[in-house]
Amino acid sequence: MSRPQLSVQLYSVRDHVAADLEGTLARLAKIGFSAVEPFGLPTDSAKLKAALQLTGLTAPTAHAALLENPQAAVQAGLEVGTQLLIEPYQPESRFQSRAELLTLAHQLSAAAEIAEAQGVSVAYHNHDHEIRNQIDGVPALVALARETDPRVLFEVDLFWCEQALVDPVAVINALDGRVAALHAKDAPKGAGTSGQVPLGQGDVRILSSLQSAPQARVVVEFDEYAGDLFGAIEESFAFLEKNGI
Image (cartoon, rainbow, N blue to C red; front, side, top):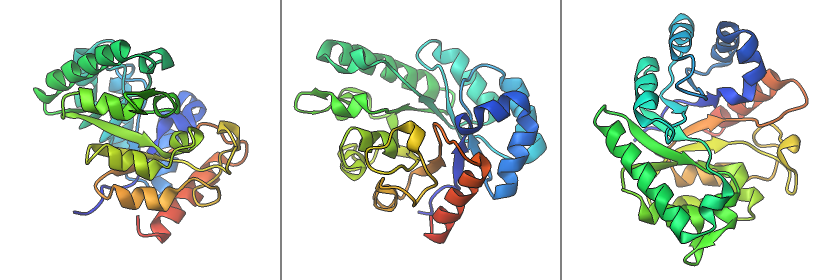
């Protein structure tokens, strides 16, 4: 199975998107990306669809307010051609007790059922608190996977696994084939989001993680970057291509 084409999370260039959506997408396409991962659906899905068509990009995955209104999120995803809708964040309190975790598992499973009827899949994206906190002796993210319908997939953020001091490969393996996407971002050990660097220039275990999930879409992301942001994205793209990703 060949890996899906590389993508980039539009949150990385959120200020540019707000100022000039079409121009930003065109710059990403010029770097070599054929896919992007939008955020904030269902907002502005019609505008996003038009910009994607104009620039020749696709949005196979997207972050969406999935648990707030699954039907609206699915319809917005369908409008922009998304096959995988991702719940981007739930607060830490939901990963600190089994009761809260079970409620979240039920919500995600219900959303997956609604989405599947429209030919769309559902996933959850982690930060560090889902890995740091443990439920039943395992990272809460793994416990969540055990309690959700198998149709619920995962987008593993490699940087946030490292922030929780856990090897992302171990997380990928524990999710047992349900990793549909990976957020690839890098930083030196001990650095926070403000210390993020182009892929291959930090200490996040990028290549071993990507090799552990060959079926997963790779999505480049920067939470923050102080320098030439598009230059850093281009360097990250080049690093992945050089390493056969």
